[in-house]
Length: 362
Image (tube, rainbow, N blue to C red):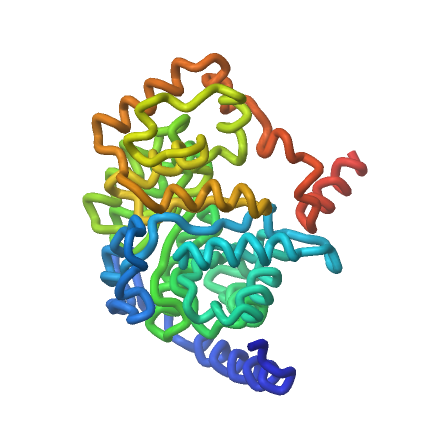
């Protein structure tokens, strides 16, 4: 049930009061220190029977190995129809998915997620990973960060997030200690860092090694395995959980594969389509906690969700899967394709509108 306006006003007052208290909190954490020891959450004590699950290293939470991402797909212009997104969210929920990743940077995605999740009474049962993308007016000024936190709380109708992440390492030296303070104060259960480009994998790995983050969020796919020897190796060594973005390369894997048939051995893993092939490859890496998949198409959601059941490939099968697609014509060109190559006009939200306005000016 969506809260009444009166409830929202009281919530905002409490949120602002908590923010003021946090702003006065002394900055005492250095790199390598963790503000608080997280504990297991009874919401995530077990998963539905038959689902592929992974364990969050720092808490013991049990999560389905597939989650829902929201970049571009959940960004809509005000007043645009979004019943299809409600359908996508419902299908993921009914299939057992509980991890949802979003960000204030994703246009209207936070608002869309907050409204749909609250209206469907699923909000408090979701494992929500959100992000922080701010600097400040001066060194150690946390006013921008607090404003971002409070706005995210209101949009997503959440007092506390399960993971708060430093988005794309922006202002990371200040953001990670601050988020660890938020963990101590109860605004987030866990702290993470993110990026979606190979050039930053070494930096992500260093933050994992320092011991001040609980999660790392990185790009990884069957076509781009660069993270294996850096970020994923460090995460396994340090007991840090991993969220994966770009597991299907923003639609580029499907474009490169085209109408090629699945190999016969895919049936051994219960794989019925290419989406499940790509997702199971990522989910099967021992370091990966949850692989995020983004879509605005309910039919594609159903295709993705099949990856949550059946066996995962072992190390030998993973290499067989990789060799097979590498031998397909056109697969080596994945990195040269634009994101969502067949959907350039489909995802028209605040982000695309702003990008179009900039192009018009230049």
